[in-house]
Length: 128
Length: 307
Image 1 (cartoon, each protein chain N blue to C red):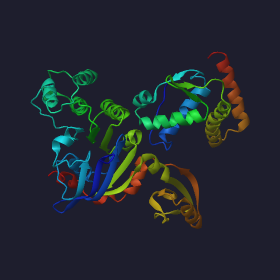
Image 2: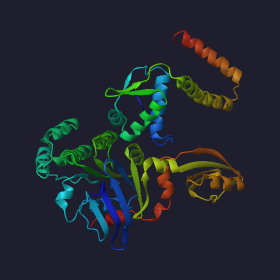
Image 3: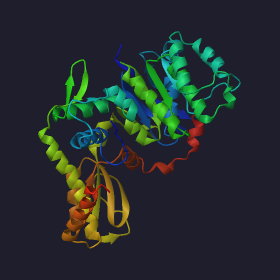
Image 4: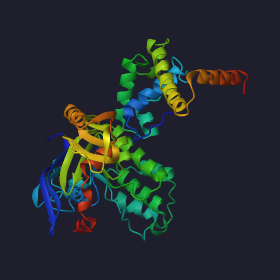
């Protein structure tokens, strides 16, 4: 599991961990039933206070994304959590907002943008 | 005995005409990482020297594990792992000689752990300390501070002048120490992003005074950064209630404040400004906002803290 912490970007570190684990589960890079590193190990790996990691795990657990099995560790919860779809939308909306802002700056209207999106999608579909 | 590992009460210290510490009271509970931050000459090193019994409290009191470090140096120093900023190791010794020498002072020295750290840090036992690189010297200093598994680890500017790889080792050592049940870390640093990563609590010194001491998360949560856009460009800083600092130019000004958001917003509206961004500041920004008059004191004060 790859988590990257960037200090000084205004997002609290525990929140960065929460966001990235949500992103990894939503995008399928963390599958249901997969085990996460123990608090202490992740803390050493990403060099943050263990309490911060524990707090992120607690939040993810109450959001239904992780479950703790006693004595075994922390795992990605089974089944697609109802939050995942909302989370996917949130992540996509963030990117779309950036894209729209840039397009507006360049005077590119939404129709042209959609056309470009279709072109890119077609190229990806061709395996390029 | 109290459950505070460190208890400082009304500690003041002057060196000639310089006030190095001014009525500082600070408690460090067991099992946490305390980040001590402040500019050059803020009093961080002076405070740490009192903990180690290198300086005697002239007014106020210092207790470490409930003991007076000056009156009971064995009881205190035997339980502290210490890494100083200048990492003053005996230059003429070899690495293995230093380890044997240090081991003799600490009944709890763990030779297996020392050997493991020496391997991890890639230190050659036969090498003379004076021929070690700056990074390797820091790693050796860290090894001697860690190998007796001290209940309290004290690091004075451990990252200063080191590359990113060695800084990683030091941060990992801090995390490992606190992850072991009940052990405590106090470290001073001017690298606030490192403090933000690993500290539970943060204490901020400025001109010898403790200006802030709280849970790191509370400090970060209680401050806000507002970016204001004024209708008209201004040459001078706008005056706003509750603003710790105000920076910018023309129409856009960024304000760091501690609570009082509603008052500040109201004042901004009154002055014809709208809030275009409201975000949480980093520890770095909080620090700069709190210490914005920091240039008034010269760096020379740093030298004066040496007894």
